[in-house]
Length: 332
Ligand SMILES: [Zn+2]
Ligand SMILES: [Zn+2]
Image: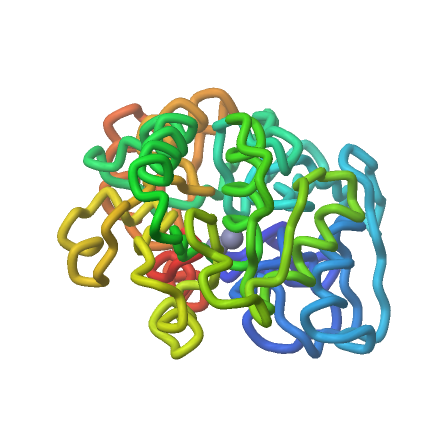
């Protein structure tokens, strides 16, 4: 029996990795909605990912939870399972499967850049590496996140009469932007859309200090002048945002590389800050794993599959519909 099928079904233990439909046994790489769904019977994931799942879907979103620590190996029948840090969001993991002398790593989503809110990715030696390719084209070269934050802080200084409204996905991106602001020495309160507060609290409860965070609603008129406000991308067009005096609209996403996309969505200050690997990170990570075979998923498979073949590696695209949603969305 095959250890892992292309739909990430682990035959020998009758379990799936990140399945898009409810199953008996699921191994979950991280808490983003297109990887972690509710309704599974049994979930194995890191402690942090389980906390995120419970926060989003409720305590009873699965019947049984099996929390694991990074680096801890669990034997299930003939298969050894180990979760390793993926550096994507809090709790995110790559999953190593070992059976006989075969080693397969499913990366989930990952990045190689420093991130004060997650444990850094480490390359795990394997025979087959399943990689994401959200930004799998050479045109995607993410700049240093701290330079993007410097751009934002310059704008804040230049427009003291306006607030800066940053569109950022509520799980992962928002906390990373806040952390980057703190690391850049910004100590003022940061104001949040109500839907972000729970996830920021969860990060803080897991030891990620985010400083003084406040709710952006119920404040006297003009209180947000000169302040930084964060909201999920959908909320920046709501009535909620229009109450602010002439805000400078900013957005933090890997997609901000595409200037046209920023313009179309009315973004004045695009911040190219991504939680996914860019092209260079992808093509340095693959050889570091030593894998002879690479499965590519999450968006732009073709260019990376082609690159692998030029390196003499066996490569195949996986068309995982559910993961494409995130790849196109704002979580990037
Ligand atoms: Zn993700
Ligand atoms: Zn994803």
